[in-house]
Amino acid sequence: MKIAVYPGSFDPITLGHLDIIKRASKMFDKMVVLVSVNTAKSPLFSVNERVNMIKEATADLGNVDVQSYEGLLIDYCKNNNIKIIIRGLRAITDFEYELQIAQTNKMFSNGDVDTVFLTTSLEYAYLSSSTVREFASFHGDISRCVTPHVAQMVYSKYGYKDSEKIGGNEDEQ
Image 1 (tube, helix red, strand yellow):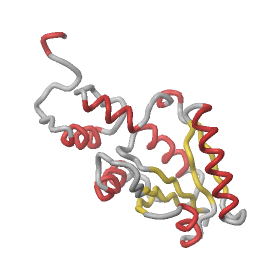
Image 2 (cartoon, one colour):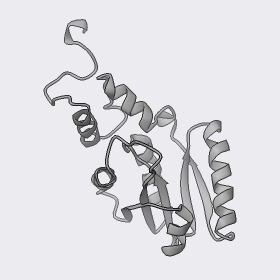
Image 3 (cartoon, helix red, strand yellow):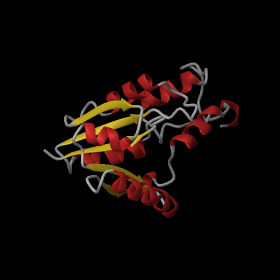
Image 4 (cartoon, one colour):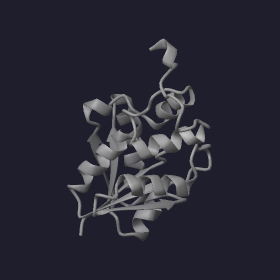
């Protein structure tokens, strides 16, 4: 069985992340979406909230499992007999960073783990979780960036009520 892991903070999961998950899930028998616990970051959502968001967003994908892990990705891969890491690339700057990480993972796994890069679909090339959070924090409409469920959760974190108009003042329209 070919198993791949797609690690990330997913704070929140975007349509770009979902695009990578859906495409990769067609290439492997099993896909693990791994919510990384990074104590150096201050996430908007708890690990459990992120896991639940991803489970809801991928419920229609029968071969996708969502888990969380605190520690080295290579240790997770070794403990779960995973040989392939999936990473998404939006731009050349992503590649430079991701290549260095992939090479480090390869070295520390004694050559047992490879990284497969998937380029983001053009419609999501601009998209990042940090952009979604920032836009939402200013009451911007994030409906083209995340699923409706995730949008509702993001807006709730920023204290917006469901009845509030998102994306600007109605008088300006």
